[in-house]
Length: 180
Image (cartoon, rainbow, N blue to C red; front, side, top):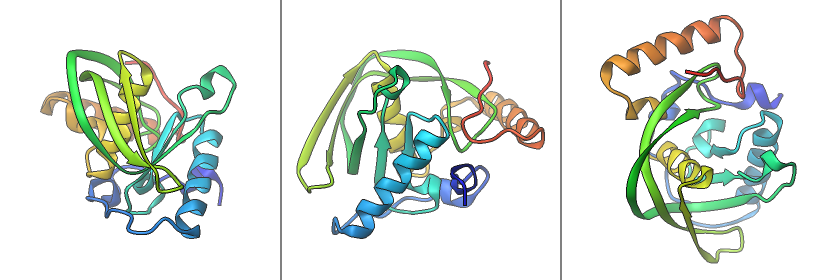
Protein backbone atom coordinates (compact mmCIF):
# COMPACT_ATOMS: atom_id res chain seq x y z
CA UNK A 1 0.00 0.00 0.00
CA UNK A 2 1.38 3.42 -0.93
CA UNK A 3 1.64 6.31 1.49
CA UNK A 4 -1.19 8.04 -0.36
CA UNK A 5 -3.43 5.01 0.20
CA UNK A 6 -2.51 4.73 3.88
CA UNK A 7 -3.67 8.24 4.76
CA UNK A 8 -7.17 8.28 6.24
CA UNK A 9 -9.24 11.03 4.64
CA UNK A 10 -12.44 12.76 5.74
CA UNK A 11 -15.19 11.92 6.48
CA UNK A 12 -13.70 8.74 8.05
CA UNK A 13 -14.91 8.45 11.66
CA UNK A 14 -11.40 7.64 12.92
CA UNK A 15 -10.62 11.34 12.43
CA UNK A 16 -13.36 12.16 14.97
CA UNK A 17 -12.18 9.68 17.63
CA UNK A 18 -10.45 10.40 20.93
CA UNK A 19 -7.21 8.39 20.82
CA UNK A 20 -5.94 6.17 23.61
CA UNK A 21 -2.71 6.97 25.45
CA UNK A 22 0.20 4.69 24.67
CA UNK A 23 0.89 2.59 27.76
CA UNK A 24 4.14 0.95 26.64
CA UNK A 25 6.76 2.11 24.15
CA UNK A 26 7.63 -1.10 22.37
CA UNK A 27 8.63 -2.28 18.92
CA UNK A 28 5.06 -1.89 17.67
CA UNK A 29 5.13 1.82 18.61
CA UNK A 30 8.58 2.30 17.07
CA UNK A 31 7.46 0.65 13.82
CA UNK A 32 4.33 2.80 13.74
CA UNK A 33 6.42 5.96 14.20
CA UNK A 34 8.77 4.85 11.42
CA UNK A 35 5.85 4.13 9.07
CA UNK A 36 4.24 7.47 9.90
CA UNK A 37 7.48 9.35 9.16
CA UNK A 38 7.81 7.53 5.83
CA UNK A 39 4.20 8.38 4.93
CA UNK A 40 4.63 12.00 6.02
CA UNK A 41 7.75 12.47 3.88
CA UNK A 42 6.25 10.62 0.89
CA UNK A 43 3.21 12.91 0.90
CA UNK A 44 5.32 16.01 1.60
CA UNK A 45 3.55 16.74 4.88
CA UNK A 46 5.13 18.41 7.90
CA UNK A 47 3.12 16.50 10.50
CA UNK A 48 1.05 13.35 10.86
CA UNK A 49 -1.04 11.96 13.71
CA UNK A 50 -1.70 8.26 14.27
CA UNK A 51 -5.44 8.42 13.51
CA UNK A 52 -4.51 9.72 10.06
CA UNK A 53 -3.04 6.28 9.34
CA UNK A 54 -5.90 4.48 11.08
CA UNK A 55 -4.22 3.92 14.47
CA UNK A 56 -6.22 5.33 17.38
CA UNK A 57 -3.30 6.00 19.72
CA UNK A 58 -1.64 9.21 20.90
CA UNK A 59 1.35 9.39 18.58
CA UNK A 60 2.41 12.33 16.41
CA UNK A 61 5.36 12.84 14.06
CA UNK A 62 6.47 16.30 12.96
CA UNK A 63 9.26 17.66 10.80
CA UNK A 64 8.88 21.34 9.92
CA UNK A 65 12.54 21.64 8.88
CA UNK A 66 12.11 19.11 6.07
CA UNK A 67 10.94 21.94 3.84
CA UNK A 68 14.56 23.14 3.95
CA UNK A 69 15.75 19.76 2.64
CA UNK A 70 17.08 18.37 5.91
CA UNK A 71 15.28 15.85 8.05
CA UNK A 72 14.91 16.65 11.71
CA UNK A 73 11.85 14.71 12.89
CA UNK A 74 10.14 14.80 16.26
CA UNK A 75 8.21 11.79 17.55
CA UNK A 76 5.74 12.74 20.29
CA UNK A 77 4.04 10.08 22.38
CA UNK A 78 1.06 11.08 24.53
CA UNK A 79 1.61 14.78 23.80
CA UNK A 80 -0.27 17.38 25.76
CA UNK A 81 -0.44 21.11 25.40
CA UNK A 82 0.56 22.69 28.72
CA UNK A 83 0.51 26.30 27.52
CA UNK A 84 -1.32 27.86 24.59
CA UNK A 85 -1.25 31.63 24.76
CA UNK A 86 -0.05 34.74 23.01
CA UNK A 87 -1.79 36.65 20.29
CA UNK A 88 -4.16 34.72 18.06
CA UNK A 89 -2.62 34.27 14.64
CA UNK A 90 -4.59 33.44 11.51
CA UNK A 91 -2.74 31.26 9.04
CA UNK A 92 -3.34 29.00 6.10
CA UNK A 93 -3.47 25.30 7.05
CA UNK A 94 -3.64 22.19 4.95
CA UNK A 95 -4.08 18.62 6.12
CA UNK A 96 -3.16 15.29 4.59
CA UNK A 97 -6.64 14.05 5.58
CA UNK A 98 -8.30 16.88 3.60
CA UNK A 99 -6.40 16.81 0.29
CA UNK A 100 -6.91 19.62 -2.15
CA UNK A 101 -7.80 22.43 0.25
CA UNK A 102 -6.31 24.90 2.68
CA UNK A 103 -8.26 26.94 5.20
CA UNK A 104 -7.59 29.98 7.36
CA UNK A 105 -7.35 28.90 11.02
CA UNK A 106 -6.86 31.08 14.09
CA UNK A 107 -4.57 29.63 16.77
CA UNK A 108 -2.56 30.90 19.75
CA UNK A 109 0.88 32.12 18.65
CA UNK A 110 2.72 30.43 21.53
CA UNK A 111 2.53 26.81 22.61
CA UNK A 112 4.37 24.56 25.06
CA UNK A 113 3.92 20.82 24.67
CA UNK A 114 5.11 17.94 26.80
CA UNK A 115 5.44 14.43 25.36
CA UNK A 116 7.44 11.25 25.66
CA UNK A 117 10.01 10.41 23.02
CA UNK A 118 10.72 6.90 21.71
CA UNK A 119 13.06 6.28 24.66
CA UNK A 120 10.31 7.15 27.14
CA UNK A 121 11.97 10.42 28.14
CA UNK A 122 9.73 13.39 28.89
CA UNK A 123 10.42 16.14 26.38
CA UNK A 124 9.25 19.74 26.33
CA UNK A 125 8.72 21.58 23.06
CA UNK A 126 8.14 25.32 22.88
CA UNK A 127 7.27 27.25 19.75
CA UNK A 128 6.19 30.82 19.08
CA UNK A 129 4.96 32.50 15.90
CA UNK A 130 6.16 29.75 13.55
CA UNK A 131 5.14 26.63 11.65
CA UNK A 132 6.08 24.39 14.58
CA UNK A 133 3.59 26.19 16.84
CA UNK A 134 0.81 25.60 14.30
CA UNK A 135 1.85 22.03 13.57
CA UNK A 136 1.99 21.00 17.24
CA UNK A 137 -1.53 22.30 17.81
CA UNK A 138 -2.90 20.86 14.55
CA UNK A 139 -1.52 17.35 15.11
CA UNK A 140 -2.45 17.18 18.80
CA UNK A 141 -5.98 18.23 17.84
CA UNK A 142 -6.14 15.10 15.67
CA UNK A 143 -5.52 12.93 18.75
CA UNK A 144 -8.68 14.37 20.28
CA UNK A 145 -10.89 13.98 17.21
CA UNK A 146 -10.57 17.64 16.20
CA UNK A 147 -9.78 18.65 12.62
CA UNK A 148 -8.82 22.01 11.17
CA UNK A 149 -12.40 22.42 9.92
CA UNK A 150 -13.63 22.39 13.53
CA UNK A 151 -11.89 25.75 14.01
CA UNK A 152 -14.07 27.37 11.34
CA UNK A 153 -17.45 29.05 11.61
CA UNK A 154 -20.36 26.85 10.50
CA UNK A 155 -20.65 28.66 7.15
CA UNK A 156 -16.89 28.44 6.46
CA UNK A 157 -16.92 24.77 7.49
CA UNK A 158 -19.68 23.97 4.98
CA UNK A 159 -17.81 25.86 2.23
CA UNK A 160 -14.52 24.13 3.06
CA UNK A 161 -16.18 20.71 3.07
CA UNK A 162 -17.76 21.44 -0.33
CA UNK A 163 -14.33 22.53 -1.69
CA UNK A 164 -12.77 19.38 -0.23
CA UNK A 165 -15.39 17.10 -1.79
CA UNK A 166 -14.87 18.78 -5.17
CA UNK A 167 -11.07 18.46 -4.87
CA UNK A 168 -11.33 14.81 -3.87
CA UNK A 169 -13.73 14.08 -6.76
CA UNK A 170 -11.19 15.74 -9.08
CA UNK A 171 -8.50 13.33 -7.83
CA UNK A 172 -6.72 15.31 -5.08
CA UNK A 173 -4.29 13.15 -3.10
CA UNK A 174 -2.85 13.66 0.41
CA UNK A 175 -0.29 16.42 0.15
CA UNK A 176 -2.21 18.30 -2.55
CA UNK A 177 -3.26 21.77 -1.40
CA UNK A 178 -4.81 24.85 -2.89
CA UNK A 179 -4.77 28.40 -1.74
CA UNK A 180 -7.83 29.85 -0.10
